[in-house]
Length: 247
Image 1: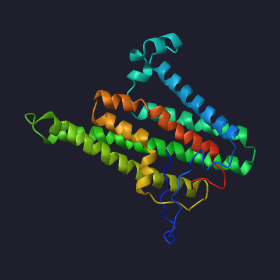
Image 2: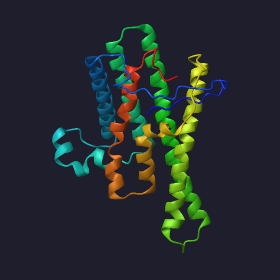
Image 3: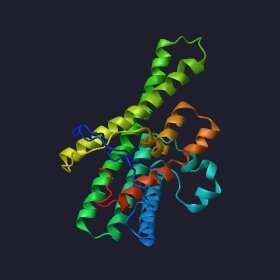
Image 4: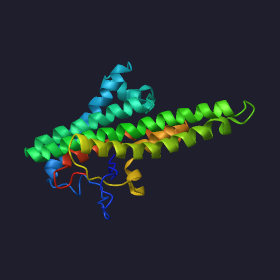
C-alpha cells in the first residue's frame, strides 16, 4: 500500500527516489526478524477481521467459519471503506508491534511510527475516494440519463468512470496529505512524486473499485484478496528504518 509523498516544496529536486520498500528484499533485518514482523502483521489483520465480523453479527467459532464458508463474514463482506480501513489499521499496528519487538533503536522506532501513520492515510484516502466517487457517478447517470436507456449506460458506465476517477484522485490526494503530515508533524519536507508504478501497490483499491463497478462472481472472488493485499502495509511499517523509510 505504499504511496510516495508528492514533492511540493522541493521542486528543484530533479532525481527523486521513487523506489518502494520491498519488505523482504530491502529490509535490513534477518530472516527471523522479518518473519516476526510478517507474523505480527498477519495477527493484526486477523484481529481486525475478527472484530469486524463480530460487529456484523457473525460467529467466530472455527467450525461455523470454515464449515459454512459461503455464509461466513469473509465471503459475504463487501470491501468498502469501513472494512478496508479497519483491516489496514490492523495491518499497520501489527507491523508496528513486530517492528518494535525486533528493533530497540529509538530513531528506527520513530521511523516506524511515521511510516505507520502515513500508511494508514495512504490506505484510507484512496478507498474513500473510490467508494464515494462510484456512488456519485451512479447518481449522476440516474439523474441525467432517461429510464428507457440501457442500465449499462445509465448506471454501470457512470459508476465505473466515477470509481476509476476516484482511485486516481485518491492516490494523488493521499500523497498530498502524506506530504503535509511530514511537514507539520515530522518536520520532513522532502517528498516524492507519484508515478505509474505506485498504482501496482494498490491491489486492494483496484479490487474495491472493481467491486463497486461490477458485482459478478469473478470480481467477488478476486476481492477476497483484499486482506492479503493490506498486509503489505504492515510489513513495510515493521521493516522501515531511518535508512530506508519512504519519506
